[in-house]
Length: 115
Length: 120
Image (tube, rainbow over all chains, first blue to last red):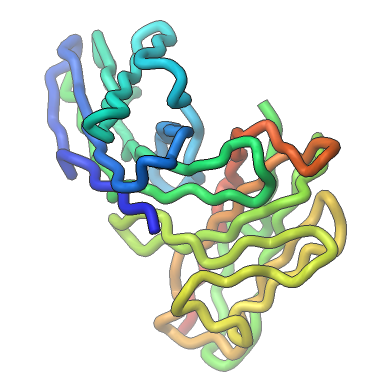
């Protein structure tokens, strides 16, 4: 089955700096890669996703890149703010259009933005 | 975006009792719902996939008789932890995927807020 590795496990950045989280996946058939933000005691919230037919996607301060050949994808947060502090999870799944396909999550990255 | 509601958000029970957690899709029909378990400072681990009108598909190592899943309607799935023990204490999270005609889906998963179970 799919295996998703995520690094680093913790990340501390100064407010205003950028944060980068990297994930690798094992199944070359995976074609959907979402990123979730989870605040303490809450469920994950989708912040951005990318599909295998594009290499990069951006939404304001958040961007995701995908390298299908190397089977890795990354989350970039620019101009970090204290409210960006949370746990971030990457995930991967395949056959997006078919019913019932499931996500495999990375181990998570705890991001702390210091004011 | 779509809303998925979980209830209760917190529950404390005595060892040996059963606890039911509900997952509802509030503004869309979810042909598929997923149940996850998350231990402190760990990732989400998929427990089972719940399909409306059929039996749930459990992941390897998850006891189907202990974690009963029912998906009786397109907007409701329930997880019942039977004969709960302290090691069942965890954060349980559901997610739902909107179903479209022809068995296709939009792809995006919407997550509930989670239910924290504490078994004394």
